[in-house]
Length: 535
Ligand code: GLC
Image 1 (cartoon, rainbow, N blue to C red):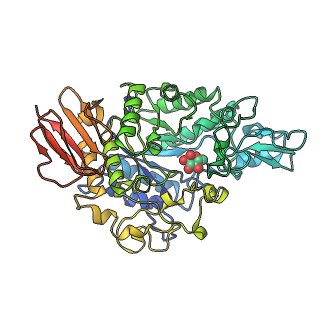
Image 2: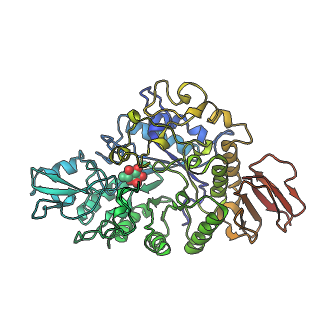
Image 3: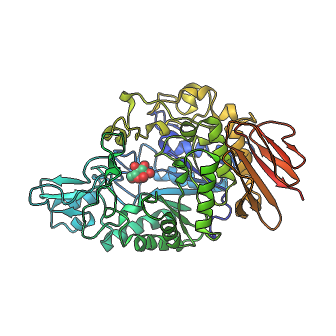
């Protein structure tokens, strides 16, 4: 992909939780605009030059904006279309590209399209959604499950048919087999691209094509009832997604993206672990190598440790080859916070890893200051996933707590009680406190994003370092001009390593003098270094 050459990373903003300017306890577009200096363009900025905004469209908020009633509008909770245009202009003035969320698989059940579709079997939009007769005994047409729990079918007594919802009942699936739907959804893209949006993050794309015969999914033999597993895993999703037309549909929307200069599209896709990973990634990369790519989310699942991470990165880099650009993502609004998953020191090392790998890192707001999962008491639960499958740890509120700007009341996020509680450590873990602390997360993210201006870190090759073992993971980044070695001591044991090069330490997670003595590097527990070969 030749587009977005100047982008050093993408910063994901969850608009509800970034900055509240109108004192309703919920973040807004004006708040994002107000904080653009934090992101780029000033000496103290984070120094990242693309943002991705989770949905800000009109929505009854059953799934916090992923249930949309108007694809081409702005929810008054977040502002107006003018606020959005202002945000774009101000972002562009700071050299920040703006990516927005695009939710092709489903609308809200309150979308005018669905209301029409539901109104009668004869309505001309009936076929815009997936309607089917009950089985003779009145049960749903097949055994498919909703990702968020329960059947994927909801009965409509008025018309006597079921409609399909791969997510919530309030998120009916669009029927992408219908060319009118595809055209309408391409129009949505034109609308935002014309306004000046630079990129699209396409939500849950795997579901937009299903088995045309709607066959039952096979049961998963490895699923154990009552063992706290996600009930969705009780089936293998053979027929409910990843259908034969998936890549044709993605090609159609990618063509729209390609018709505008320097725009890109990223597909949200979690590969199916029961199928071959390499071929799944290559299919997504092959959709349109000029403008489209999938995220890589494997960092969410890989067990923390030098061995497992080395294996994961080596494999993925080799699988996709040098032509495809990786978009490694270690945190988002759907998964527990990095610090809470692996621990503080460990999370910092993974941050260092992400920022020194090839491609374009995607960073979730707050991860750059080491935010933890918030504690959500049962009466504060908002997320429907937690409400529908309680107690399994699937709820997503903990990773959506407000951004910790400062030690002021409500962490400087709002002047009133926010929609979700602020995490308790905000008086020390916040953007103001961390700015000048060389041992902080923020300091590291700023330093490494600035190092990523070097050609070698952005475009250089990746090659494993031979000295890697189960404690230390090392790799080279190299171009014709320079060679960089990154060493991550992912263990709690200090260690000394001979690296065989004359190096200069460009960044170290630990403030130590003399980490490099001759060709040897002294690594503290959970210590990471970036070394430039000065041959
Ligand atoms: C994606 C989103 C998630 C949402 C779901 C349904 O996975 O990231 O937040 O709930 O799709 O739209």
